[in-house]
Amino acid sequence: MMKLLFYAAKDYDKQYFNSVLEKFPEIEIEFLDHELEPRSAVLAKGFDAICAFVSADVGAETLEILNQCGVKTVLMRCAGFNNVETGKAKELGITVKRVPGYSPESVAEHAMALALAANRRLYKAYNKVRENDYTLRGLRGMNFYGKVAGIVGTGKIGAAMCRICRGFGMKVIAYDVYENPDLKEFVEYVSLDELLAQSDLISLHCPLMDSTYHMINIETIKKMKDNVILVNTSRGALVNTQELIEGIRMNKFLGVGLDVYEEETGNVYEDHSDDIMEHSVTARLLAFPNVIITSHQGFYTMEALTAIAETTLQNLMDAKNGIHNENDIA
Image (cartoon, rainbow, N blue to C red; front, side, top):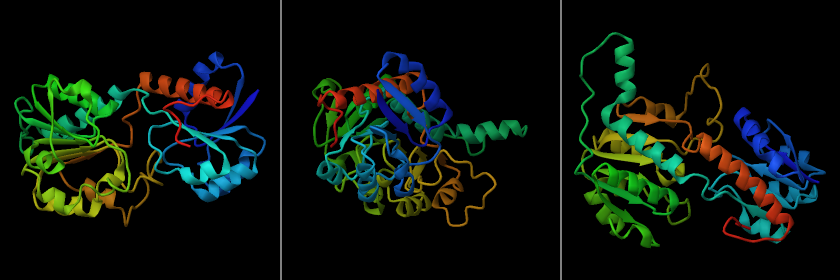
């Protein structure tokens, strides 16, 4: 029996992992509320593997402790792994696997939902009508039909976003180091500067690396069209938040939709409704009428949660059997 310790388990994690567990009779799961960090890593003693999310601390210290506890496999139940010290994992002989393509459409559809909500001020319209205010002031948007969508990153999620934008009747351009041949029929690949200058909607779907860290900054913002819509459902640190605020104050954006942001750790999936967020840049963003922020929920669909659970547990079986594939990151 493979013993798996599951960190930062939410109710939906327990529901969907338990629902597919019967397909994996060799795996036994224990769920913890605690987030994975050095102090909680010691709880993994006696377990073969642990499961963590993108918000976990899977740095060198944590991995050292997990190794001392006898953990041989780290399962990331997400696509991103910038929080994992992969070099240290390899040094310790710890296998790390992720879920790179759980449901590309779930995130892409949420990206378009953010774009539409930011464009047509749906959050503001909803609250106005609840207060019996049926005026249209502050609700004007633009047609997406006939406009230019710029997709940064055309992996599985970015490709899904390209297809959605095409369905809206938009011209789709894209920037990626690796061009996706499946999209060449209707997507034109351009340089990043060209994409910034031409796009009415810019949607980010690339991984966080040294080369993409703060790729959206005041200099790249100045290269964008006026009244552009910016959406980020990928990684928060792709965007320099302080300089995004500067760009918003310059009236550069018609709308901004964020499902991820630099200040996520300690905020996302937590209830701070009674707290005064005195130094929060997220709170500053929310003060702007053309910004909508959601709580890293792009993955949160029934289909995606099922796929995440199945792939994560299959990853554990593959690790046990020495099977290597595209899900390996260490």
